[in-house]
Image (cartoon, rainbow, N blue to C red; front, side):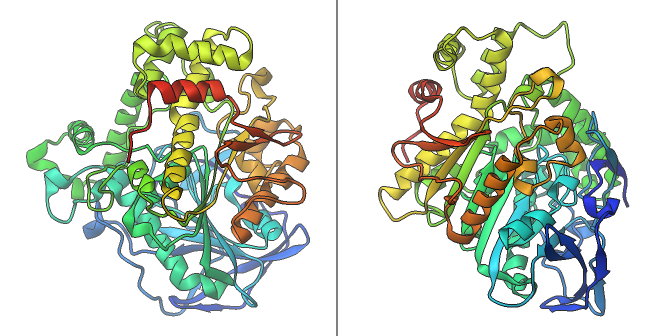
Length: 539
């Protein structure tokens, strides 16, 4: 069963490239037929919509993924598979077209490869964002052909369950078999990585050199995977773009969300088993109501669904496990955009019920563990960074950026540094993306997700064009995609055109702008404020 929401049509569906059918490629799961295209002077072979798990519907709804069975005949990999069930995005981005979703067939992946023979190439596995509510591996901005060509790597993008189907906490309601229902999206991602480990060699990839990369919720998923015991050995490097290892809930909080969701479905604890057979459209209608309620309660980014700790797959908060050395061998590249909170500030519908900007900022900071009495200290720290008094709007935007993205990134780097002091660990690199969008008269600044088209080399995509207005420096896209490629190949983003030192005790951070530069501990005053008011617990 399927419905539609909005996305930008991928370049390979809009046409304009020279496509030709490939010969069949044998894999461990069966033969697959793909297509070839020329991009940036390189022939890229593309295989789309490959199932990595069995349908997560019927008896498998709200249960961990089951590995895909081998198929007979030849799988048609020339068209993308459906997305996970989701509600339409509102407002839809410019150039939006319907996105097909399917509960039955959503656990699929796409592959772009420069070649299926020769020495194994680095593998880059992309996890899309969308607040754990939206998104697809086939969104136009994630077309991996150009990055695969530039990086000389095999690029994989995956779908995973979203919203209630990926995160609803049902262990108390449905009992055995549903203990991990609130972490299914993450378990889907692990299953996709196992598929990559077993199959990517047939596509020219090296399963011993896998880099996970993702943005927003995709990066938060990676931060969480770093703290999941079952993930060890499935990836060797990680790139987190605007992510965190702290996006989770305790079981009692997740149970409260589930109780409210049941009510919205017209159910209660005695009839909770009807969730297993309700039409998916009913689940999405309840989810939409929950999303609206969450948005009304938040001055930042509403996140009604998150993973749950204290569960079999995620026994401890990820940051604690990372601090104790879990996945310590993984090399990490992590960063944020300067104005991560600008969309939440500029796009929130005006309401007479909203308090003034200082109170909104205090509420956002309180959600990050900063007592309201300490909120004026944050404004003072921001003023020292800016060398002037910030406006109320600036304080709110910065509070969102720091509370949800930048300071959690700093704490993850600190946790990994703590682990490395007691045992050998992977390398750490950091960045701060500061190139400002000219859209909306410059109000958005270096906004959330603006980095994606620079990495994927899609500055001309419709969504990117809305943000960049044709003014994005190609040199910055070249530098970033080159650094991401270098990291996938060798575990360091350092390149001849972009000398990039490890983070280290000096907190060296690459500032990505028209003229990239390495700085020690940028916006130090704000980090010191958070460290003093909300110190990281000892592991």
